[in-house]
Amino acid sequence: MSILKGIFGAMCTPFQENGEGIDLKRYHSHIDNLLEAGVHGLVLCSGTGEYAYLTDEERHTLIIEGIKHINGRCPTIAQTTALSTKECIDKAKTAEGLGATAVMVMPPFLEPPSEKGVIHHYETIAKSIEIPIVMYNVPQQAAPLSEDAYRELLNIKNLDYVKDSSGDFLTLQRFIKTGGKVFCGIDSFAPFALMSGCTGMIWGAVNFMPHECVQLFNLIDENKYQEAMDLWKLMEPVCLWLGQNKYDVDYLTGVKAATNLSGRKMGPPRKPLLDVSDTAQLELKIALSQLPINKVDTKKEN
Image (cartoon, rainbow, N blue to C red; front, side, top):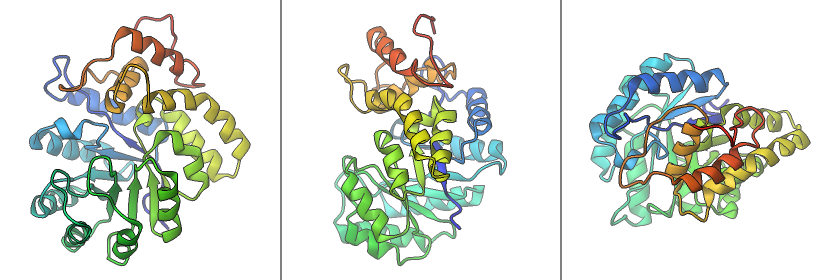
C-alpha cells in the first residue's frame, strides 16, 4: 500500500504584511485548517509556497516548524530541490532527520544536465536517504524527465513516486502506464488524472478550497464519477482562471490571492511576484463564488 496517496496540499507561505518574514502563527493555523478539512498530506516548502524566493533559512524553518506542528497527523513531503547534487543530498538528509515522510526533488535547473545527469542526480540522492523521493517533472522550469529515464529510475530503491506538472496529458498517461505512483500537479487535469489512475494530486488550490479537493478525490475513489463531475463543474472555473487569465496573474500569486480571499490570510506575495490588481481580484472572486463550501461573496470586502 502506498504511504503517499490522495490530496496533498502544496502549501502557501504566509508572510508578514511587509512581505518579508514568515508569519509562523498563520502557518500553524493554516496547517490546522487544511488538516481539519481532511487533506491527506501536506507539501512543505512547495513551489506554490514561493520556494524559489525563500532563503535557505526560511526553507529550513518551514520544514522544521511544519513537521513539528503536524506532529504525525498526516504524511509530509518536504521539497529539497537544489542545483547541485551535494546540496540536494544535504537538504534531503536534513529533512529526513527532522521526520519528513518523503522529499520532493526537481531535476537541476539553470544550465540543466543531460538525461544521464538527471538519472545520476536522482540515483545518488536516493542512495543517501531511506525515505521515498517524489521526482518532479516540470519541463517548463527544469530538465525534463523522459519516459525512458522514469522507467530506469523506478528500478532504484526509494524512487517510487513522480509529480507530473508537464501540462501534457499524454505524458501523464505514459507515466501511469510505465508504473510507480504518479501525482498530478496540473489543477485543470484533476478529475481526469485521478480517473486515469493517478495516486493523487499535489495541488496548490488546496490552500483555498481544501474541502472540495478532498471531496473530489473521495468521490472518484468510491467510483462515484457523476457526483465527482458535478462537483468539478463548480471547481473548474477557478482552476482554469489560475492556469490562464487575461491579467497575466501567475499561478503562485493567483493561489495566494484566492487563499487570502477565502479568509485564510497569507499576506502578500514576495517580490518580484506582484500583487493582484483589484480588477483581477474581482474576476477571481466570481470564479470562487461558485464553490459549494469555500464560496467567496463577490459583494463582500476582503
